[in-house]
Image (cartoon, rainbow, N blue to C red; front, side, top):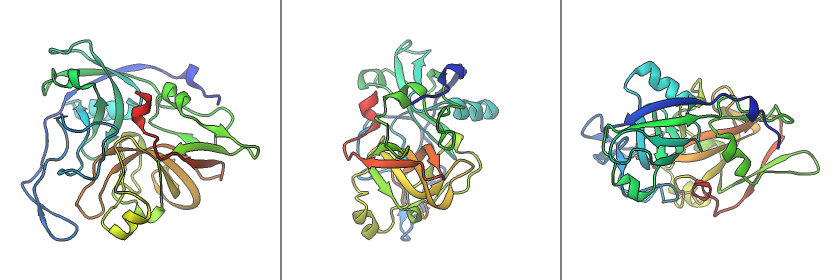
Length: 283
């Protein structure tokens, strides 16, 4: 599929490994329980892309390494520019020179999430600097401008097994399919280039119906009846495609985070199921 990748700009953007943040000692879960578990930020040694993001003791946990720029304006720029699939290079500390792979962004805390192999993870410390070779902001399909692309490195886009049928419908492989009513926190946000929105998992009947208890970090999901080009919202017969970037949450209206990579309201975009598909396949 033809894109405008040759016209895109590649910028360096950087941040440091973020300290873990709890915000407060306890918060109330959707069912009225007092919760006190690990949450966002840090170097997370136990989980990575490809692992289950539901069956763990944590809330909004980010796999691998979370970075932010300590200057607020620069951090917003980092979050705008960084795209899933960008290469990240460690520029300080014991692992200087080692490279990783951007796997997501997390709105609200405004972290960029990066995968490194375990031998590199073990050399890192909070405060180490990481620079990303950002490319992908402004990526577009030449022949299908109605399908909007976001948060995606053009090289990764070309690796995804996308096909076009005889009716000129563009079909993207996904791991799961989500109904519109399960999407919560982040709906209506003005700019989906800087974060995610959440899958609400507070109804076990729905979780079983849509096989959500097996969701993994890095799964590709199709969101039916949602259009996200100008902020994610309900729109009948639209379709958005996203990648799962952080873990489940017990907070009302929250859950695993999804970063949108494609969206369409013209009935041109479609999906096909591949239950084994995961971002880990492309690292």
